[in-house]
Amino acid sequence: MRLTSSVTATALIWAGLTIQAPAQTLTAIVEDVRGGPAGVEFMDYVKPGRVIQLGSNGKIVIGYLKSCWRETITGGKVTIGTGWSEVSGGKVDRTQIACDGGKMQLTYEVASKSGASVFRDIHRAEQPTLADASRPQFVLHGLSPIVEVKRGSSVVIERIDNVGERYEIPGPGKIVHGRFYDFADDNKQLTAAGTYRVTVGKQLVVFKVDNDAKPGKTPIAGRLLRLTP
Image (cartoon, rainbow, N blue to C red; front, side, top):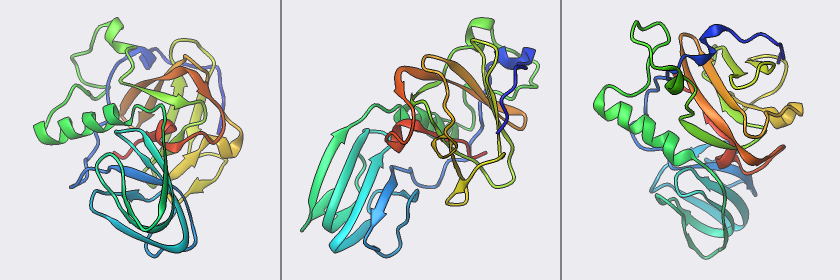
């Protein structure tokens, strides 16, 4: 991970990351799991209808990307829904968290269904206005994002409203579950209220960090940055 003072002129070009949406909407992510329930691991995406058997001692934490419910479930049978889980024979504690995953997911779905989107390649001839160039497409609610990267891809995150911050992934640091880089594992953090662009190859996306975002291992659904070109 490198931090430099260089920001190129193209930092104010608004474009987007073209993402191949999955065949079925990804609804939630496993933030923690204990007790060895079969077929589910930390940082797995889970879809509606998925059944997880926790037994008597199992425990799982699930973050819903659209509804922003965060569930801690102990024991029983868990059926993943579209906004929350159905739990039979166990205990569930739900907390509403700050997240913008629904807006990010909606963007993917629109692009997938229409074959086109508001996102553009950075080398296209038609360029947006300066105002559009710096307009965030979603908000992150954590200063230490978890970045999902495709194996072999190079990701650059740099601040565009104030010169000085630039990060490159992969770099020194741990990749979790084969495709996730967690800023918190390296004690790295972005700046509250900052606006950033993420570049993957020839494409990019712009996001803003919430004014009240906190550093460290805050709920994953609020700080997940999905980049799967």
